[in-house]
Length: 153
Length: 119
Image 1 (tube, rainbow over the protein chains, first blue to last red):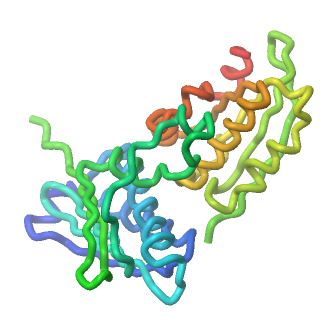
Image 2: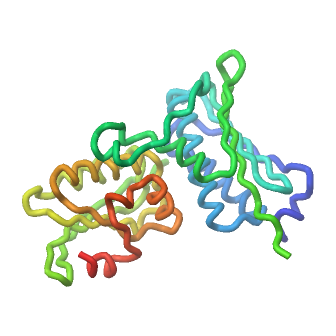
Image 3: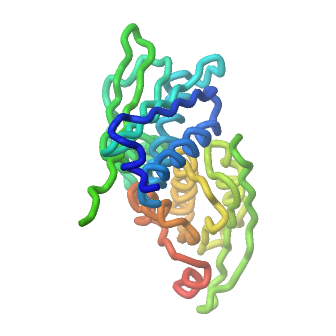
């Protein structure tokens, strides 16, 4: 089956709910990869998506839900004719500002924390990434979009 | 859920005759990998270890916390006057390491023989 045509114009939605426990981001990675493969994404784009989804889930668990296992992380994948949208939802207040781009020289020289690569990777590996603060300080989410290549003639 | 990171060290000699400490990793490299990554590195004798080769050929998953551990290793190695190289990364993680700038401080090679030949 050739992915996009088989998916049709109406988005197909898959949802996963994860505990806020590190390691479970791999469940979302595997699910996103399976959906992306069904849609016909190239293998390298599937790998990009896996890393971006994993990092978004880790951020949601660590920063959004503060590793409170009583709170879950929602992952909603919407497959459309032009690409795949992934929303990763947590119970945090969301981001007010995005962190600056990491600088490896500053990290090596001890002027910057060695951590803090996650959001940079997300932005670098998908076509769109936006962080949305939820109303009432809850249900914030990151929205990722990875687009299918236009069909070749 | 995260698979335990296994690590071991092999002492090899490059074709040019230089001793090389090869740190071999297996499993995930994530926040739980501190002992496997930094602990194994810190167990190397500082005085006699000048060339370090990281073997990622049996690593399937590296996340940003794992990348931070590799950067911490590079910081300690730079401070000790050691040179670090790596091989065995998938094309995707080769891209990721390049994006975050690790390749500026750790030369990447496709395999062990290519890495040793360059040392």
